[in-house]
Image (cartoon, rainbow over all chains, first blue to last red; front, side):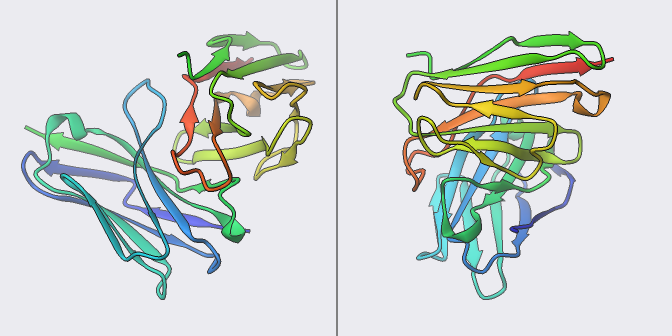
Length: 113
Length: 114
């Protein structure tokens, strides 16, 4: 089945600096790669996603890149702010089906003032 | 618009007891999911449903059963609770197979089995 690995498990960056979180997946048929943000005590919420027909997608300070050949994708957050502190999860869909997605183990991002 | 509602929010069970977690969505979503969240292990899929009357196993289905008798409700049952089932349980739903709008999660149920 699909296996999604996420690194690092914890990340601390200075406010204003950039943060990068990386994920790899095992199923070459996967074609949908969402990222979720979970603030402390809250539910996960979709922040950005990318499909296999594009290599990069941006939304203000957030960008996601996809390398299908290497089977890895990354989340980039620029000009980090205190409200970016949260746990971030990457995910991928096995067997090209969005009827279910498999999550990575999460990255706890802390923004230092 | 309530979105996805989970009940209860907290529960403490004794080993061997049974319980049912209820997930209700009012967005007319076809797909519904149950995940469990444990420290350092992310969100793991327990069971899911692609429509009323259907269910399927996810990554960690053992010890759980589910039912989707009505489109808006997805129930997760624990027949004989074990301490290993102590976790935070999240229900989620999506509009269609392409998840164009992503998954909508409920607020979670924190279950402790003693």
